[in-house]
Image 1 (spheres, rainbow, N blue to C red):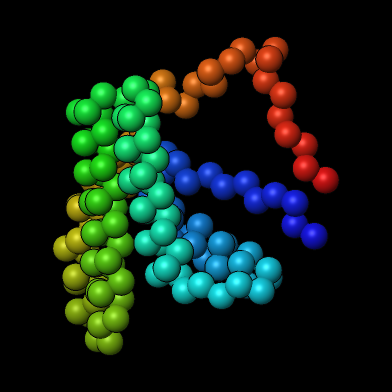
Image 2 (cartoon, rainbow, N blue to C red; image 1 turned 135 degrees about the vertical axis):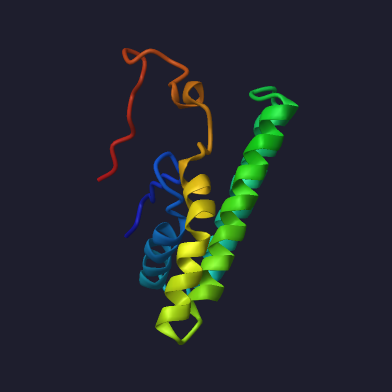
Length: 135
C-alpha cells in the first residue's frame, strides 16, 4: 500500500515537468488511475501558478515577485507546447531546424529560476527539523 508520494517540482536546474509527468503517470497507473501526460503537465503548471498566488496572499512574496514567478511559469508552459508541436513534425531535418531555432528561448526558460534562493531555506534550524520517515 502506498503511504506517501514525495514530489519535488522546483525547476532549479531545468524545467523537468515532462519527466515528472511521466513518473506521475506511471505511479497513478499503478494505483489504477489513468491520466494523460498532458493532463498531468497542465495540472502541475496550474498548481505552480496557484502556489505563487498563495505565497503572495500570505505575504511570502510581493506582487512583483509573484508576477515574475507567474511569467516564468507561463513561459515554461508555452515552451513545452512549442516543443510538443515541433516533435509532431515528421520530416527529421525540419524538426531539427525548428528545435535549433527554439533553443535560445528554451535556454532562457531553463536557466531562469522558478524561485529565489532564500525561498529554499528551511524556516527552522536543523536541530528542530524532524524529517518524516516513511516505511
